Image 1: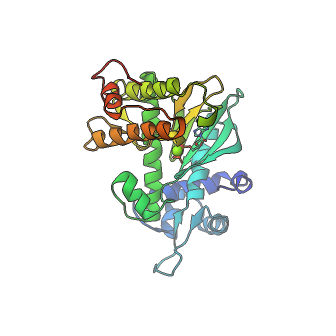
Image 2: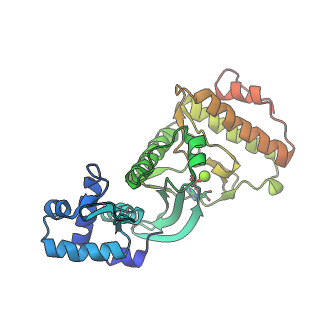
Length: 299
Ligand SMILES: Nc1ncnc2c1ncn2[C@@H]1O[C@H](COP(=O)(O)OP(=O)(O)O)[C@@H](O)[C@H]1O
Ligand SMILES: [Mg+2]
């Protein structure tokens, strides 16, 4: 994770160098030092001095092996963190970062506050952390495994989650509210809650119904299928309200995999309630309910 002390020590010209490096990554895998100097419009010796420190603090990196005939650098995920956080702080979205809320398979989540003292959740998308096979299974493809492509995929993942959250809230699906997206970082409302605790559940039937009601709203109202739905992506508040989180894998209902994804999502819910609460939910009925073909769930 990003070292906040090192982040705080960065100066404007450091950010300029990081930002130039980021934008030149569209052109090169490793950006030639001369181009960084040219586009940053900072004196060459100053750029060299700053690059040495940025590289020592791992905001940018050189190739591991000597594969280049020139001196070249690329942005690291810490560099991307620094640029994203700087933008969010500068635009007044967040004022401070607090404790870590979760380490997901493909993200790090922290608590944050804004200037009004509102608590927020900040999700850093980090693709490329899971194994090749998991990515293949979940996404159906494996992209070229370069640093640039991982950074770009992390950004795409964040943008996708952000736009899904915005659509879902207007369809009245119970999810965190999207606040802002910058690069690979999504800022959303903080949920004070826990994972589903089956052992302590007084009325598992009404919770299962509430989950499926929200899956139905997502399908009919937002035209979205979660595609990674499981008990781990549902939070419950002390008042019993459930929230469905973690939407970067969501697909539109006319996506070629839509039906399979929907069936798998519902199957996961049906299975965990059967195993953990001994509750029988008919998969076909639940599917028809979510798709709006029947009015009621028969649990
Ligand atoms: N808005 C939020 N408020 C509070 N905690 C959250 C929020 N979003 C995620 N979390 C916590 O972080 C964990 C991982 O988040 P999630 O979105 O599922 O990411 P991943 O894709 O990495 O699984 C969750 O299980 C939850 O504990
Ligand atoms: Mg998750």
